[in-house]
Image (tube, rainbow, N blue to C red):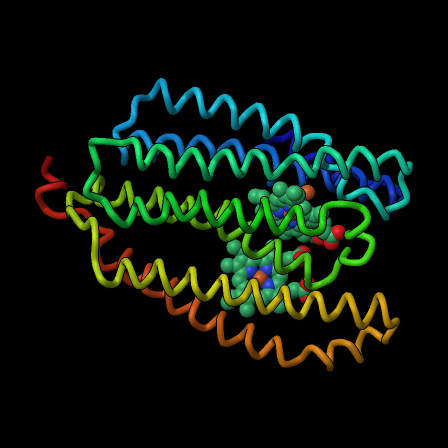
Length: 283
Ligand code: HEM
Ligand code: HEM
Ligand SMILES: [Fe+2]
């Protein structure tokens, strides 16, 4: 853990060296360490929810770990194109980061296949929704949308624009938030003794937050492409462009409201049913 925070705290006089090590924290954390934690939680949930043998699940996990490290470590280079380091990073970052979606694809295929294969289905439908959702959304957000701007040829134009925000939101939502909501949905009924495996509020929380976040991603994406075109192709002023793309931020706020309603429903469920029942306390 320390290894992944310390490089970001080292002080350097050069902005280039500083940025170089800062990405060890940001990139190696999300596209290395957390990807493996996510794979681990995903595997645990799939064993519990689908009843597929641990041995089968473990084999997939090895493939995911392998793909993650093979692509993710040198994939750090996709943050190095324009910070002033050696140009070799254009090639290294481009090639290895383009392979990164494979690990996310493997996780999505893994989750859906295990779900299809599993015979002993667990009654916890909400946990299953969040689990499969996390695998699929992170593939789209991190894998596909990450790939969309990871080659130096595209990143030349999209770097630091709302295209980045488009990818960052769906990737974080799928790979971090959804997998955590999945493990909470799985473990809460076990810890409280309430067999709340499915409910209208729980389903609404899932669909509202997901549809809201997908809408936000589209709004960021459309705004981002327009921004790239006007600012980087047509060479318009930054603030002029912001004015042009203002309408997309209204769409963003609308979708973000739906997202917030979904999250609020999840939190209400958590507080209403989060305390153990009397029987569970005695047991
Ligand atoms: C769980 C996985 C991931 C998460 C949470 C994530 C999140 C983010 C975030 C928040 C940023 C913005 C960083 C900043 O500028 O401060 C970013 C940048 C970037 N990500 Fe990801 N990402 C993930 C996976 C991927 C993958 C798999 C790829 C490529 C296939 C990718 C490609 C990129 C690129 C190229 C940038 C730089 C954008 C720019 O130049 O402005 N990401 N990511
Ligand atoms: C109410 C919902 C939300 C709204 C309205 C919102 C809006 C925004 C906006 C406007 C930015 C600045 C983008 C830019 O100018 O480049 C931003 C950045 C960011 N947001 Fe959100 N966001 C929301 C929820 C979330 C959630 C749930 C997550 C994570 C799961 C998240 C993660 C991030 C990250 C990582 C950045 C920095 C991205 C970058 O460096 O490009 N946001 N958000
Ligand atoms: Fe990265």
